[in-house]
Length: 244
Length: 244
DNA sequence: GTGAATTATCGTCATGTTGACAATAAAGCA
DNA sequence: TGCTTTATTGTCAACATGACGATAATTCAC
Image 1 (spheres, each protein chain N blue to C red):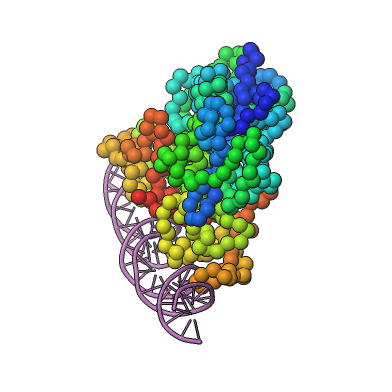
Image 2 (cartoon, each protein chain N blue to C red; image 1 turned 90 degrees about the horizontal axis):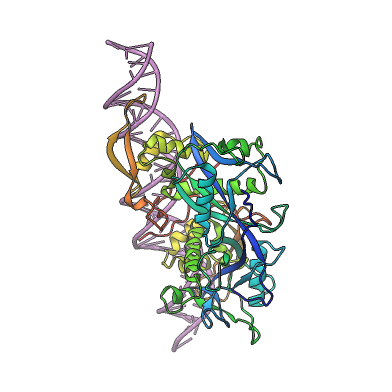
C-alpha cells in the first residue's frame, strides 16, 4: 500500500446482491424496479451505498433486508467481486462490490409506494434478453451465474438453496435449475449419498407427496458453514456438470 | 442500487497485489517494506490508491509497475476480492481490492532511496510466521494462496508461472510449489499431455540440461488468454491436488 | 378397493480416470 | 565406456462415471 502525497481520491461504494433461488424448478433472481433516473423503470440488482463504519458483507445483508422486508435472510452470502469505478454509472465513478446469495425460496414483502419493489424473476428472462438490467448488472449477473454453477460442482452449497432438511430429488432439482441440464436421478443419488462428508441421513421421510416417500437429508457437519468460516469444500472428486 | 437522500459516504480505495512466482522450486511473493507509519519497516503487499478515472485492474497493474520498475508485467492478473472498509487501517476506513498475479520469475528493479523496495520472499516465511505482514495482508495472502491452489486444479493457469514455452517438468514444479506436495512425474505427464485443449507440443526440445532432453510445450489456443477475456477453464476433469 | 402412475432407491456393466510403479530412452558426466 | 540423471511410455488394479434395468413404496383415478 503506497502513499501518494495528494489526498487520495475517494469513491462512493455500493454493494449489490445477486440473490438466487429455485422456484418451480427454475432459477430466479431477486430484482428491484428503479424509481428514479438513471435507468428509471428498469430492473436492477438490489443494493445500495456502504455506510461509514460498515463492512461489505454487513452492508449487503442490510440492503437486502431493507429491500425485501426480510429480517434474517436465509441461505449463503458471499462476496462475488468488485466492479468499476470507471464508467458504470452515468452520474459518476462508483465502485460496487457485488455479492452472491444462494437461498431457499423466501417471500418478499411488499414495499411502500415510495420504495423500490423487490421481486423474483426467472433468470432465463434476463439471459434471453426479455429483461434488460440497469447499469452493468447483466454482466454482474452473468458472473454470478458462472460462480453459482461452479460452486455446485466443488462445494456443498447446492444445499443452501434448500431448507434445513431436503430430499435428494430436491437437491437434484437445484443442480438441474442452476446448471440448466437434466441429471440422471440414479447416478445423482449415488454420488450425493456416496460422497463422504456431504450429506447426513436424518432418518425421517417425506409424506404426502406423489410416489414413494423419500429420505430426508441434511448437510453433514463437515459441510455445514461454521460461524465466521465459510463452508469447506468437500466434494472430492467434484460433482461435475456435463460439458457440451 | 438504492438511493439514500444524504450524500453517500465516500471511501479511499486501494488496490493491493499478491504477486506469486516460483523460484528454485519454491513459491515466492512480492513484498515491499513500508517506509512510513503505520507498520513502518514491516513488509506489505504492493499497492496503492485508485486514481480518478481508473479501473481496478488498471490501477493494480500501474501500482505493480511503479513499485517493481517493470513496464509490461508478465503473467496472469485477476481480481481476488475486496476487504474492508472497516477496521483494517488505523488511519481510517479504507476499502482495498486485492488482486492476484501469477507470473514467471521476473527481476525487480531497485527502488530509489525514498521508494519502498519490492523484493521476492518465500511464501513459507510468511506462513510460518517468520515474516509478519502489515494491515490484514496476511489474510489476503492466505486467500490468494487458496485461490492459486484451486486455480491450478481447474484451469490452465499453472502455465502463467512459466514462460511462453516450458517442459512438463517445469509445469510440474509449479504445481508442486503451489500445492506444497510432490507429484508423480509419470502420472503428471500423462494428465498434462493427455488433457485435450491444455498443452500443445512445439516440436522443440530442451538442450544442455542434465538428463534426457524434454519436449517443449506451450498453452493450446483454447487455453490461452484472449485479450479481454480470461482463460477459459479446460481441465475437465480437473487435475486434483492430493487431499490430506 | 384395485390397478395405474409416480417417484425413490438399489444394482449392473462397460468405459474412463487415477495412483502406484516397472521399464526404456536419451542425454551429460566421470 | 559405463554411470547418473531426467524424460517418456507402459501396465495394472482400484475407483468413478454414464447409461440404463429392476424393484419398492407411495398417491391417484376409477
